[in-house]
Image (cartoon, rainbow, N blue to C red; front, top):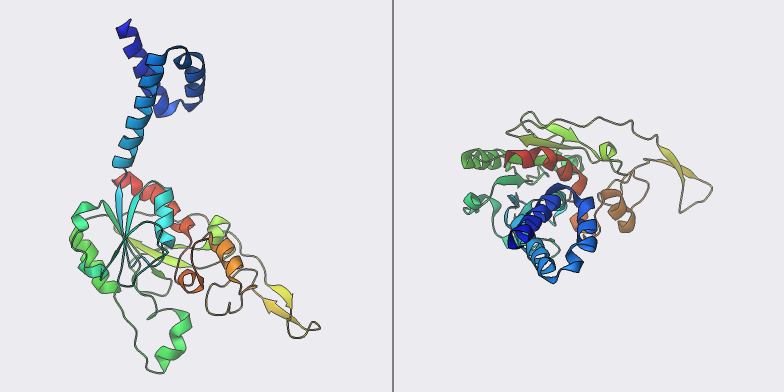
Amino acid sequence: MGLIRLCLVGLIMVMLMGRVGSVGWFVREVCLQDRWLLGWFRTVLIVGGVFVVMSSPKLLDLFSGAGGAAMGYHRAGFDVTGVDICDQPNYPFRFVQRDALTARFINGYDVIHASPPCQNYCWSTARHRAEGREYLDLIGETREFLVESGKPYVIENVSTAPLRYPTFLEGTMFGLNVIRRRGFETNWWLPAPDRRRRMKPIMQQSKRDPRIFIKKSAYCTVAGNGADGWSCRLADWRVAMGIDWMNRNEITQAIPPAYTEYISKYLITLV
């Protein structure tokens, strides 16, 4: 009898690994009729859950911001730790406040994502740069740091940044109401999803004078006061980006989690 029960426990484990639909039937028709077996089933669930948590690949999120990239990796199964020189009280996962390029504990992680400052290359600072203002440029230093680590990495930045052979992603590829085109440099192959045709501009009634209609983008522009986007409301930005935990300043520095969730499909096969 003991051998039969042991075999049944083994059967449960097999079903948990792939035949989820059969588990409910087995619990209802067999386990509930035998308290000993039900106890073993509960043990298998607990041990299996602990195993899944312990075996999750670890990802280090450098220059993390408030966690837009981190959320996508988390949804794909990564155990994420964020690092940023500024405190990030809304970061949704484990967080360490320090200079990202002095994170000497990287050996404990399987992969590394980095989003160094983009202000030296983005369109919103073009006028200030033309007037002589200087911004941090850490892309080269970040790349050197990641190459030296020997780990699979991702460097994210604006589309005009000097990334090496980047893969470009934008919100339209994932059905989002933002364009937010970003480049992703990797030391492994990352294919780009199919591009979708962008929606045409819309005519929006002026708030100051209802008789006037203004040409606006059909997408949200998550920056400043909304630029040419159809809305400057934080609530609309959150929906457009797929982010519901950030404040206005944080979300303007973020990328949609859908980007890194897509990247994770390929990255997770390397660990």
